[in-house]
Image (tube, rainbow, N blue to C red):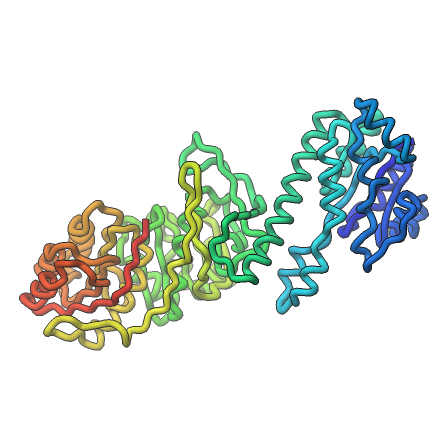
Length: 509
């Protein structure tokens, strides 16, 4: 008679699975709560201590870590010496293992969880059995996911055995599962001991969805998310309407959320190709959106809009007049949803907008991964330095602070022209700073008169200051730190421009 060992924390479907195995001629070995659940359903079960001839001990920490279990799992059926060894020690073969693990992820996700509780939810015996069975997949079927119960039963019913190909697939799934489990434990303990960049990096993600394609149609892609979730992120967003998100949609929405998280007042952020094309601040969502729209009426077409207040009917009416790929907000009023959902393809998403998230940034390179702290440095306007004869006016200060929040999210070299409530021109990703400045100033046009300019990094020369002055800019904010700072300051003084140094750089590659 074939033997199956079943020991699961998540008991979804396990009684039905075990019952079907018994009907197919298996005898069942089980432990603890699983054994009780099967017995309560009148399924015949052999207790683990009957197999090991050793009692469970140490509050259940030791029960399956025994040669009678692992010998039955690891013995190669095609090796005469292996078979002789287990026969000599009266060890019976185990042909199927169904195990899922202590809920470590669910435990550490609970608010205020204590270290001791987390430690007790680190499974030892479960991963050991899974790994033993998976290593010997040529002879042992190993099931870690209840979604595989039905396919395994179908093959057993049709053929009397599970195929080699299925066993191999299930074994690979097991090793992915245990690797992810260990990665969560490693990450949790590493964070507790304060290792920011450990000598070994173990990361795990869960697939959220397959994507139609990547950046281009010939590139395959999928979206993976962190197991414990990340607040105020695209990974936690709920889609209310529209077709599936694309790879580019996800990246653009992420960029829009990052910018909107800088503001507490009503803000609307329009993004194209991971750069803002218009940002508007207002007293109402409608006012904020209209300012973002008016900032660049051309580029917003086909863009992503994040707005940190509920979308009301008035705002939705304006939004419905152009083609937008995505609108993401904390919520939509019933009237707003009715208006926007008339458009078949627009994606409507919600996320709580809980404020900035200081997540570690991960960037892949060929053959490696770069990690850095998120650019969430706390800045105090009181530490900024006015280095020119002219001082910013009160309204100019508001504009400088607003545009400084935005320029940090624009691809370097970055220049943003705007006022206290609106971007007017954005220059992004140019290979020299004057190039970005000229793009931003040209886009702003006559609106640059009396506006301010923000630069993500210092001016290597005074040409950007001169171009700004000729366009009518009245105040500039930048990090400073160039060996030619004095020349830029002198140019600002020449034209009566106020210049503020933050002493903080915001490169974004």
